[in-house]
Amino acid sequence: MSGLFVTGTDTDIGKTVVSAALLHRFRKTARLCYWKPVQTGFPEDDDTATVERLGLCASRELCQEGVRLPRPLSPHLSAGYSGKEIHLETLLGPFTAGTTAHSWIVEGAGGVMVPLNASQFMVDLIAALRLPALIVARSRLGTINHTLLTVSVLRARLIPVAGVVLTGEPNADNRRSIETYGNIPVVAEMPHLSTLTADTLGDWARAHFDPDGTLDRVLAKLPA
Image 1 (cartoon, rainbow, N blue to C red):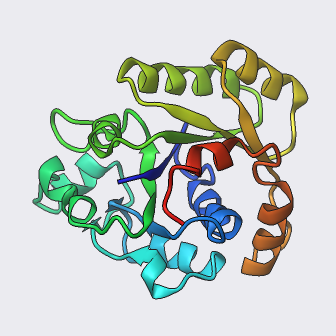
Image 2: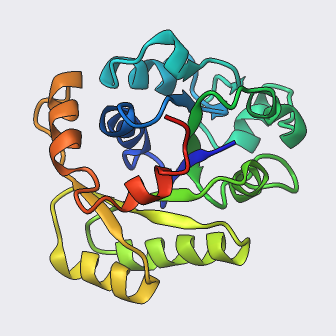
């Protein structure tokens, strides 16, 4: 299997919008399928529905399976309040049973060290999926530390890091520091679009997402 795992340095950082932008940007060169393995705060929070709307997705571009929990908390807490436990092996079912005819855009919940259960974290899911990670981070003060810590955790588990997407007001100094100290490319700087629709996001993604083709080189291994 191939694709990207979209993770972040925090929650509510823009992972879902970035996932939808990836579909706009790369669906002409790869047959993509979006998947949210763990969703908390459901059904009020439904990232799959948001990606469907913002990404103008066909049904074949969405995997609807996964753990869906009602309380908007960390996965292990939301599961515990529901009297459930998240099992990594069960969580991997839709992925391992999936067809190689498409490539995955998998969106995590929160950051890499968010607990899934008493002993496993989001990074364990990323490692099990064997997908390179795309990190979504804020552009503002504090992002250097948060982003480099995330890179360090991923690399300690031998997970390739494909790049970073910075969200918010562009900050050239923070971008340069992340690229220099992390030895990793910033593949996009996504502004807060004043009107966020499928059209405005698609226009932005096609014009500004990964202009240097960094992810094109990563996704070149994906089936068209």
